[in-house]
Image (tube, rainbow, N blue to C red; front, side, top):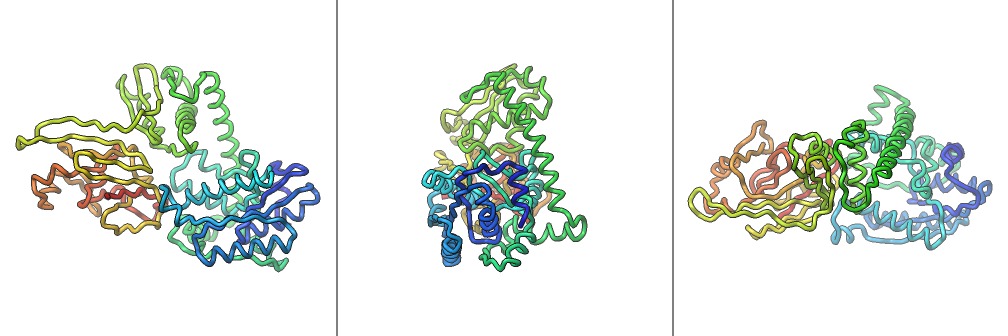
Length: 468
């Protein structure tokens, strides 16, 4: 047997009489998970249910997997339930990356199955190698403790990962020794996705050249970081309770905030912002830093716009975090150098979301997608490395002195000089707008993209900006 029994005991995953939904895709991990749980079912008096969601992404191969899982469950006399959806069709209607949509649909499916079959546990097939890939991927992305602790053995008291201490090699050996069949997902061999490159290229090199016990060592590090992260988060929750920080708009005394250790300050800011996001996450390093800069800055009155229509504002000795009422562009009227009427405008950008530029009649749509998903040669869209952007983004008119580092160049160039070089008529320049982050101009539509946000081999997520 694999290390499933030890993991169940170590992390207190199961109780006698549990009704367990086993997420089975048909791959090696989930098939081994089902087999292992069937072996301990009598001992724990478990009622097992096989759950399968057909995403409809790989066409006939997806249908093959569903058929395989239903037949496997039948051969083991385990009840099975499956649903078929079309993720490609959902992407036509929704914003967000393929990975995000799949995850939301998968967990929504688990919720439905939990209610239908009165399940109190959902077993997932993530293994030790998955944990290693996740930690490395988040390390490359610049994650803090929350990211580097990897995924949890038990989450929300419902989702359990009995294979978390078992390697992929051990799982394959377990199945081969017992002549147990499983199916293979062909997309796992496609190195266009960052996780696959880490799995197929980076990790084998690290193991061969540096540490053959890479998975075990990274897992141990994740365990340590998980404990430390739990302590910090627990401390922050106590502070939130003691300071009576409610779910709505909040006001925090900056002097009290500065008395905390910087680690607690940053986590408190992050937690308060995430508590006010519709998805409970989506707040990154740059967002927290922008709020911390407000606190440490010399200006007694300043503000910063954040994702999910949030705003952080400093009023002397108070930090105020509130929900903005709506997107109202700041528009002022001035005189252009040639004596004509000129419109100065600025529109905050929410991702995913859209911006309608009244002054030019243009509209931009923004989305976040996985690297490799979009056609980066599209004529009316650009793709930017998510982690190279200093959020928040703004769509605005040109200002004197605006500069951009054109794609492929080391230096910067004035926007005014760029327009002259491109022979843009003066009369047409008034309708040109820019996409700008907190550092510089990122995109002059139809003309230039900034080299700072170019897509590289390390890009994991991209911001897609499209003009319609």
